[in-house]
Amino acid sequence: MIEILAITISNPLLVGVYENKKLIVEHKLDGKTSDLLPSLFTKLLDEYDINTITYVNSPGSFMAIKVAYIFLKTICITKKIEFKAIDGFEFNENSPIKALGKKYFIKQDKEIKVDFLEKDSIIRDFKLPMCIEKYNFNQETLPIYNLPAV
Image 1: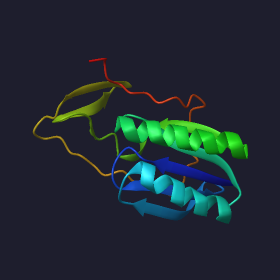
Image 2: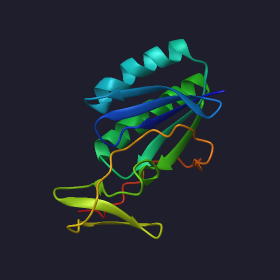
Image 3: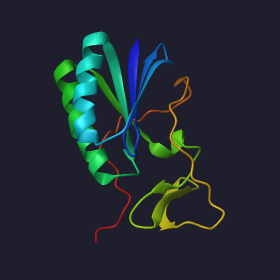
């Protein structure tokens, strides 16, 4: 069983190919989600019989989340691939995630807030896990923006 995990909410984009829940190929790409996803997925769809695609639907770059959702949802509908989502904090050790200006998304007790960082805050890079067996992927795939309307 082949599964894809896409972390598109920051640069570089991370896309992992998993066979039987274990990472077999990692793609690390610098650039815009809208430029990178089409060419990468053209290649992935030719090389693999993909059963599931999971993407990070919150929090992070609104545009990257929107582009990834529309692009990946379309692929999943047309190719009859299962589509799932997950929270980005799962892949950066629950570290703050860049929001707007000098503010960051911070997750505390399952609640996400937007605030300035404390001086001793540590920001970790996103990483693809070696195994995705322990993760609870969500069937609700709509983007979650986590910011109030302006």
